[in-house]
Length: 141
Image (cartoon, rainbow, N blue to C red):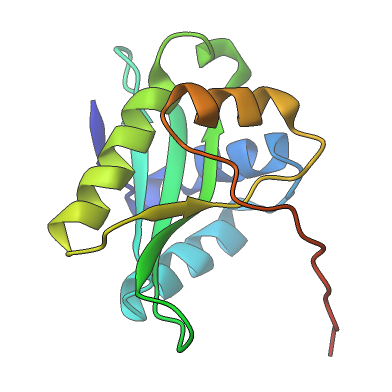
């Protein structure tokens, strides 16, 4: 079952975030979840396993660049290691795509680290095409 993330999911979302390489505690995730909701920054969807635990999550958000038509971007898609190869990622991706279509977006964009070859194969299987490779630059304040 796929549903919108709740505050009570923060602990499991923090664990999933860590599995992707972005460690955070439950309080931090809760603050970020509230930011997504309060700033209309998309939606965080969760896959719930038959026992009520989380199998994974997806965060999809709107992008409205000046230089291109608006699109939805998959900011994160993470599946617990124990839930992989069970179509959890496919279900989350389908739900994220449905969210985007319902809001009138014509495409979903995904950025994936060049070292995540397994993820790249997943997106290709799901009908995505690789459009470009790029470098990401960050300046911290």
